[in-house]
Length: 158
Image (tube, rainbow, N blue to C red; front, top):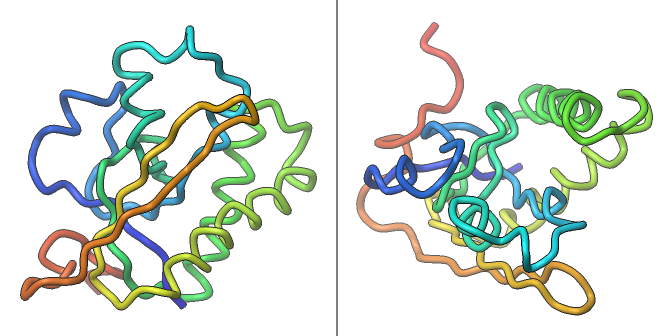
């Protein structure tokens, strides 16, 4: 199974996002955060998060780049639980039981997209606000000589 981890290729995320995601955190699109936004809310760092930011499940931060890598079933389940809890604490879900299926859907959407790419592929997101809501498009860059392990650690040090 594959998912994506946030990457910091330089310090620019520190300057453009209100909450920049640390490198190495599991990421999803995170477009849900903008589902009720209007053009008036798209200013400054919020606009940058909307336009180009991947959502880190662990910190709730944003990153400009993510890289595809393998994920274990145990890591995937922990992410589902974490995101469901975030939906309760930050986005008004009534409880974890109600939020869990939505969290699974968000993570599965990202997981399904990542399955189409080989490991170490770099992904970028671009969003626009349309009359029908948020539209997302994705770009990819094939892996180069350096692997993502140079930027993100998978698993523990034990």
